[in-house]
Length: 206
Image 1 (cartoon, one colour):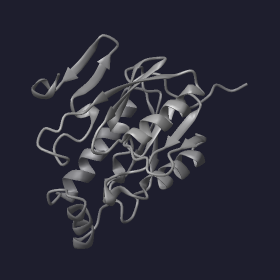
Image 2 (spheres, one colour):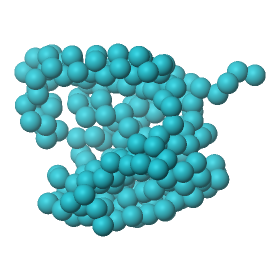
Image 3 (cartoon, rainbow, N blue to C red):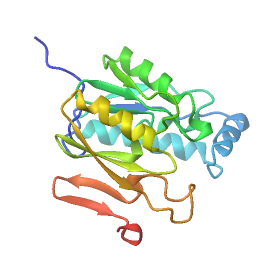
Image 4 (cartoon, rainbow, N blue to C red):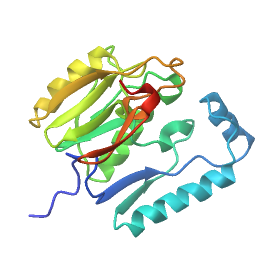
């Protein structure tokens, strides 16, 4: 039996296998796509360099890096954490509330399936969520933030899906701050570093 090459139960464990997506690069049409997704005008050369450095860093840490091709028309797709949430048995396909990100979820899920990671659930109906509102508190508990990106329907559906892996959910309300374009996610407030340490955005911490 070969060792399973996917599945997550921690936000701070060693990264053994990592998926990344190359950024969209090109001319003025590509810059326009980033701007339409609410980026400030990007320096595409710097973006390419920084992405390459990021991949090099991951590999230097011993991670097996799986690189996906750019997603045409979806400039935010290089943020691969948000469109799906990885659980022990595979991926849960989420649904974006941000119009510019609609379509990323199916594209990423399909790429992950080709990389050997099965899809085990999908959000349905009016549920919307970004994985930036989710992280592992411990091996049996996921924290989910209710926010402008993640609604109660998504929390309810995630609770049912995660129960299949014996995982519980704790919910938190993400502060309004300056509105939906500023405090985007639960992980805008707290980002785990190790089991007993996190980076906190103190101004917004309760």
